[in-house]
Image (cartoon, rainbow, N blue to C red; front, side, top):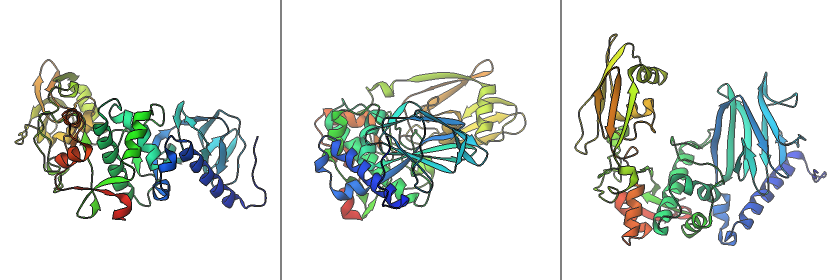
Length: 387
């Protein structure tokens, strides 16, 4: 059943409905009456699906609107496909569709809070989840770490995830979305694995971000550094005063620091490199280049019959797959048309080491102390005090 105040214009109706939806979400959240207006106003846009041929949306009591903000009646669950001039739903064309719910909505069977906006981009359907920033953080916690970790480590994760999101939002003003929902930015699976400890960590750090020189920092973080965090210039070529690298023995007993190994056929390595845009033909060997003083590979040398190529260790990780080459702290061995990689650590190594933060919390350090260790010179501030 659909109800709309007929005395209001469609766009005004949509604005009121969105505000009511967001208010319902926040007020139904345990402790929601503690969230101030400034925090409620801070929303984030996450690309949760990209370049899909079709997307299924479901949920109870969904409000569906088109690009003009007018209500659209569809049968739920609904499958949205790529059409000739945009989206195609039940034989009708649309440029954009927005779905919202007072509780949760489901996109490809995953639950999300807030709004789901569908449009066509990059030859497929783009789905953007727009929701209050603090709600996003609650859903994110258990995707990045475990909320069962010591609460001070969980609070540290909430602060750096908020800081990272705010920096990306400012950097991508005017773009369709602020972040992706994968390791490219921050892993986010909607509200599927929210829990009370994740909510507690977000509420107890409400609106807190890390700053340096009065500005929100680039709060990079990773799973396990393997003994020492990395300087930002060694990964991305940009030097930042609060990302110079620190000693970190705290993560060495963690599962993420356990030695890892993988074997990949030379043909598959060549295919992945070419897919990533590198001109490599007839690859016959992969050689490690020089190490930096932290023991990480600065370069990887690709020997090929039609011209050799040298790329950075981090570029190699990205091309082959972050989940395959888990860090740039690895060795290489060629054996019978395949390359054997052996390494330790997990992630780019810059900023906070998540498993190191867990151990520091177990050792009695608070979230603020943990953050100041991994991001030297930074200050913990309320976002409202920076803007």
